[in-house]
Amino acid sequence: GAVVSQHPSRVICKSGTSVKIECRSLDFQATTMFWYRQFPKQSLMLMATSNEGSKATYEQGVEKDKFLINHASLTLSTLTVTSAHPEDSSFYICSASSRQGGTDTQYFGPGTRLTVL
Amino acid sequence: DAKTTQPNSMESNEEEPVHLPCNHSTISGTDYIHWYRQLPSQGPEYVIHGLTSNVNNRMASLAIAEDRKSSTLILHRATLRDAAVYYCILSDAGNNRKLIWGLGTSLAVNP
Image 1 (cartoon, rainbow over the protein chains, first blue to last red):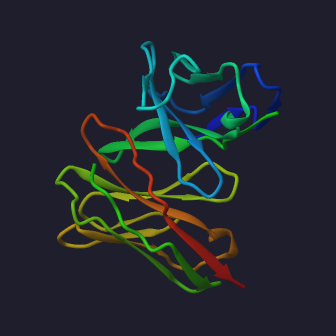
Image 2: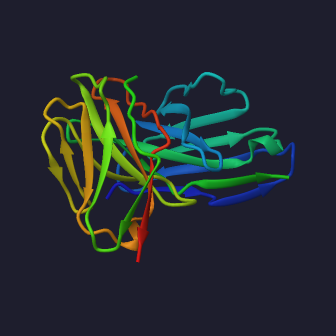
């Protein structure tokens, strides 16, 4: 159980275009999903917290107009990188939160490798 | 947010036990201790979590010090597939579900 999928796994796009990444919890419902970004040899950096049916909460320094997050259902959240530039190239990872053992445990998707040319 | 300290890297031999330490001297009473691991180019994988008592599951065991200021993740028999970066993270059981990620411990497993 607790499987999270991401689509696509890899995407290459031209500078200035927009890219949408989907995150789905396959066998559980998640009221809260998270979006992370990870640069090579660095740790995960939380970008935003996404709650179903409400606006996402962005971390300091993350542009909400550039990274659009939609969490329209209990099993789907999407991240759209708008007007992508080469510096947005990174590994994007989502997670979905499930309550177990007295606390919330995050289950992660396999990640999406974004390359902006 | 309470922070954790882990060694940058560790090495083990295949089929031997591995003890991965984590210090969290500023842990609060409501903080759970989570362990995740990440293989290259993959999303992190949940390993185990606990609050006060030691915990066991299919993947590993978690030994928590009596004062909760440190914990140890135990892999009973390391395999080559256990080579990964292991993260020890504290998470408040309350309304803050955010996980603050450090650099973790990079575990190498020798055949």
